[in-house]
Length: 172
Image (cartoon, rainbow, N blue to C red; front, side):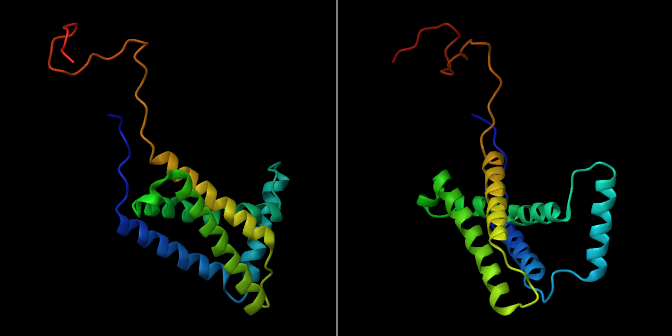
């Protein structure tokens, strides 16, 4: 039987997902994006890296941050959903549901920013990048939960485990 990684207990996954949601709400639904000190420090770090040949810009860093911020949603929600109703145990359906949830959560954040937070700048790009992050997290979770393949035996089939000596004929 192939070895698999042991899944985290559902309460641990649910708690981690709740903490993630609170952090994302704090980051995305605050009155202003970041204070000037934080923005200046990030700009200085980006400029320092760019001066040393690292291909990075403020906009590139923001884009990567939008992807990375939603990776935990996919990575935590997919294993939670797999333990749910039988229909959700279908891997592609479960992944599609998780990615759709990421898109809806991101669209909700951007809509809230547009309607209630005049100091924020909502964009469709954020929704696309957050959704991509959710998909990356779901893909990573599906790879971690897969059975590992055993090394090949060089084309020689393993002996049947029937209790009979190797090479003995068994009745069928």
